[in-house]
Image 1 (cartoon, one colour):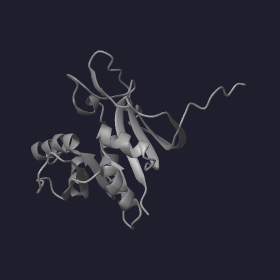
Image 2: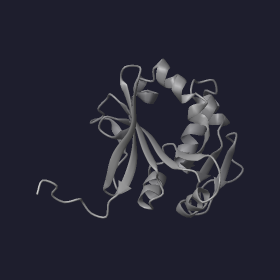
Image 3: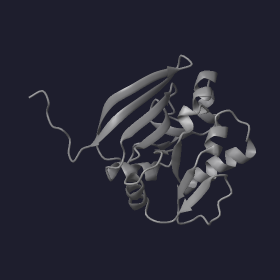
Length: 193
């Protein structure tokens, strides 16, 4: 039974991207990029929505030799969308036009590799809200995008308690934080009382 991991790269203030900044905020150092391209990081099925597919497949087509992209291109990718048409052009990519929560619930009941999201904010929110996420991982980039940030990652999320299960530093500046999430029905209340 495969686990589902939500996987984000974020600015310190919770943005997925920022206008005018380069990819990975210009901070994707050699240790981080090597880890992204490692076999260990690419032995899973990638889950994404249409918007992330359009962005990432475009990057892969424009820069196929970019470090870290080879593993993603080689990985099995499932795209949840009602707006895209099959066949999709990015290698090893399958279009799923049914409900993502139902499809991932079914995948979790079968044998197979781990399932991991990339980007896809609304897909991640839906999977987390449905209680399907086993791990929640962020790589925090040491920038604040107060003026230029776009796509605030956690807007619209339910309240979630996160228990730290792993942490790592890349290139002396990027923080990987991996958590086991618990979606809360309500705030836990006054713990001091």
